[in-house]
Image (cartoon, rainbow, N blue to C red; front, top):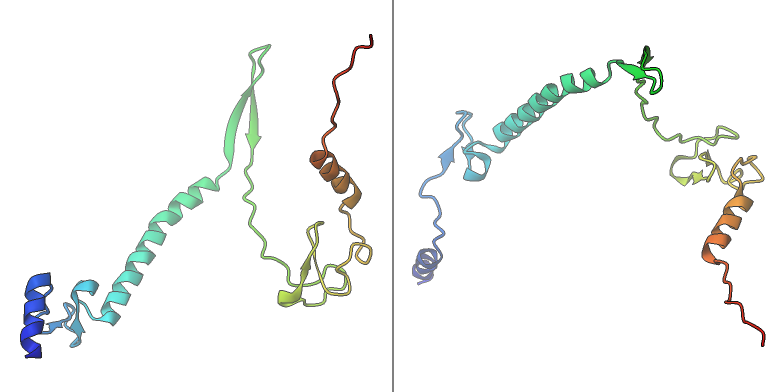
Length: 160
């Protein structure tokens, strides 16, 4: 009875299960599926990895071309003479975030405190006065107050 109802549901929904299992197209002996392009999971993973490596190799020459120095010509607006100016574009490699205190060089790991001056500090040097902070907190506070409290001027009243 249950098998007949399953057959009816399959006919109504249009979802059919395959009659026989599909062998991997690479003939490795395992079974594949339609989702993995009729390959087993291992062969599919290897082909996906090979495709991603191929795309990285194709993109790499483009990146190496952009790191070459650029030569530009600078023109003066008034005299019209051309001066050869060379600009060397230095590629700034992003440094990994430091995991040491800038004052005592102690390893801080995930518990490091970021300061507004840009450094990472341990629990002993996290306060501005303990690590000789160069950030001007007073000026930032003044600017913030000035921005939040605009000057309000009333209209002048004419005296009679």
